[in-house]
Length: 422
Image (cartoon, rainbow, N blue to C red; front, side, top):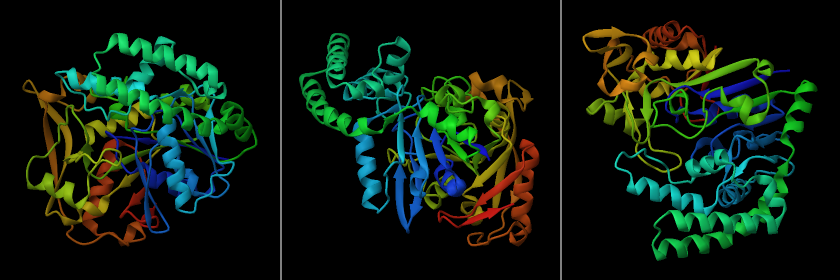
């Protein structure tokens, strides 16, 4: 029996979907514990690219139950679209999707509030406009709509009417926006009927299967540096994307979790606003973006690109308690003459390797780099660590030693089987 958690170690977009897909081969459950449709996990199935926003990647595995945990905020409209997309690729979802009774529900009202608030804010956060933040606000205000409310249509209608009335009294929506919300609520109610069949006591499911010795894989969305408590606040998501969200988001204590796998890209990217010490504005940054196809899975927004930030990655490993690392997109670095790695920061004529010390002041740090010679040869298709170029092995070993965490998986391409296991 094994319970593993897979956590993004950077600002999201680390390639978690592929690693979840890989590690879910022998899993009886894949459970997601936070976030909503603002996440995007890209996986490949029968040579087709699938982007999953709310359904755990285990949906592609036969006889694997997919739990949408209570820590998530679930959009019924997007979930129905996603279910239809998955089914169109020949994937069976029968008895495979389970939505926690106390997961909170995203409505069209939340999405309009999200976009409105971002539009009037001078200091943009870079929200996806998916209504995630406002839904979590309602949750903590104790006025939210939960999945169990989908089981009582009249109760759901009453809550929607109350929510709409409050929003119209609070926000200066124009007539066209109000009309759009009301039109979307019609489709929302229909989708709620469809989604209600998946509402389940996921707490009992996950604990029963844990006691039975079944393999369970836990997946997060976004990345640790976007964690509401441990990330680059205020440029963060609205939930605990780090391992700290597992217990609250699933009701599964951390004493049950055997391994915590950190996903780190071989370089660093970020979508949206916020500090990014190793961001590149030169030809190398453009090269990383183009070769790495660095565009958001959810929004299509171009990702900001930079060299690997070892200071941030070490902090992430400490926050999460990573037991091992999966390093993704190594092959993108095949095309560089030299590769840089951030080993510290300069600030106020001093140096530091403590990310937490300057977390509030990252805009003013200057990265200190160690430069590695590029290997300039393809790594895609290589199946063992020993077959990698010597210069590649030097870079990988340096990452592992700097973070003080073993690298156990290396991804060398987008394909399902383009993986090296150590």
